[in-house]
Amino acid sequence: MPGLRFFSKMSSCDIFVYLDDVQFEKREFQNRNKIKTASGIDYLTLPVLTKGRFSQTIKETEINPYYDWRKEHLAKIKTNYSKAPFFNKYYPYLEKIYSKNFNKMPALSFELINFFRDILEIKTPFRLSSEFSLNLKSSERLAEICFKVGAKAYLSGIGGKNYLDTEPFKERGIEVLWQNFIVKPYPQLFGEFKPDLSVLDLIFNCGESSRRYL
Image (cartoon, rainbow, N blue to C red; front, side, top):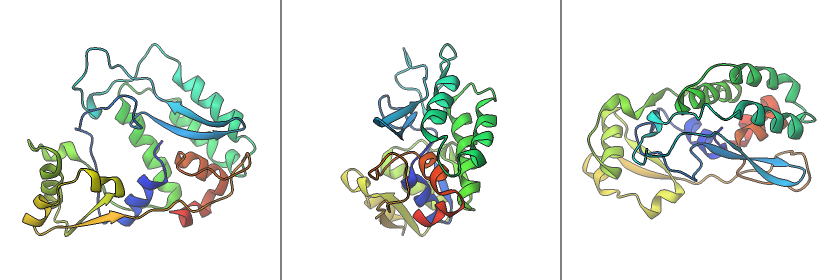
């Protein structure tokens, strides 16, 4: 369940490419995100198989079938959001998604992303990096994807300033823009506002007006 920055970037673009053939990184936010509880911040974590799979990509990452993550996720969501204004409106749809069978992480991720995209009224075309079959690394690869889709600019998260090489983009006539997204405070449960949570927190608290916070 990505956060607001993810969906803000998607809504700001003419085309959004999801990097599904890059390496899966343990202990990052590729398979987890934060929610707000009465006791503070907690995580919704999707258990995945990693033992002996050090170089697996996101699209290859399998969900651990021996862990009842559905029950745990839904219990946490009910406990912490059942009193949110829009819980009753959206929870049944979320529960329906969770009732489906998913073998790999991206299958669940894309189902959830599309669910939230619809609520946020994001119409940006959505593609996968694996469609391009590029044998390039890092910034060169990103620049080539932009070139392939005919992009004139690439929107990077602000953290990209620490690692992105802009030269491959310049060589292809592509401008690099930096996402300057600041989370606007919105109504939340449990006291003081906490930023950088899963988009789930925004949807349950703000419903149809959620898009204005992107």
